[in-house]
Image (cartoon, rainbow, N blue to C red; front, side, top):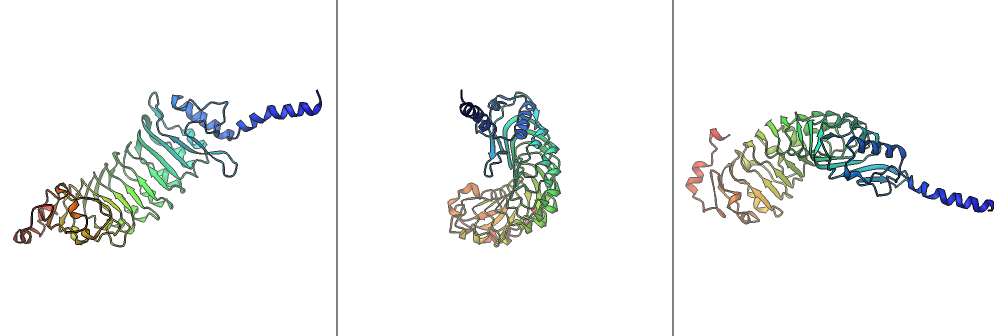
Length: 347
């Protein structure tokens, strides 16, 4: 056999091995440790040591290939199906190029977020929802300055909201819905630089909404299902981009007639509060408004006529002091005049 033939055979023999090792070996080692620390769930059975973690055969693993670096930059693990209670392994911090993490729908994922996650200095999105993770919303998240979106909804998180989160310069959205977070909304939450969406519903938040939130220009805010009280008018404004405002099931009390509405408003839910005054006439001119409910408040006066206001059924308006007009019964001017002034016991 000639030397040239031997060389060709050697190259052919080595080529598959080279192709199978596109994945960075440090990332591969970290993934295999991550899998082991989760009890080797069957959902990660494709994570095989002899295969390439960047070949798209490893379930939920995504790699950066733009610069031919082949570093693991994403984990999408919607259903781990863990066999028992396991915390998020600290070894997740050994994936330094991670841009986003999605872990969801597994009640057996428990315990607090590991502090080692603060080392993920390239992380943009953290999306861990519908799990059993617990403990406080960690203050160390404020150290990950690259974060754009935080979703830790429908877990078992408790404690108070870290004031330091507002220091995240690029954060666009935060959702902490459906946890057991208590205490007040920090005043510092009015100093987010780029925040557009805030979801804090279904918690145990108390006290007044900070006046500093008037500094924000949110397209979506959801504070429903808490124990908040007092004024919420700082969330409104004709110069704001607000599309969705959800404040239902609190103890809020303010004069709704005095608020100004965004032209882009298409969802407004104020059910089950102590809101008083008249409905703003501008509601009839908001052509995008498709969801509206002010039931179980202390509102009075005639429902604005026109636009989409009569497309909402009685359930959107009932159980108020003296709202009237279509789709409710017609108004009595004397009754409205006598009752439009809010009573001291409802404000």
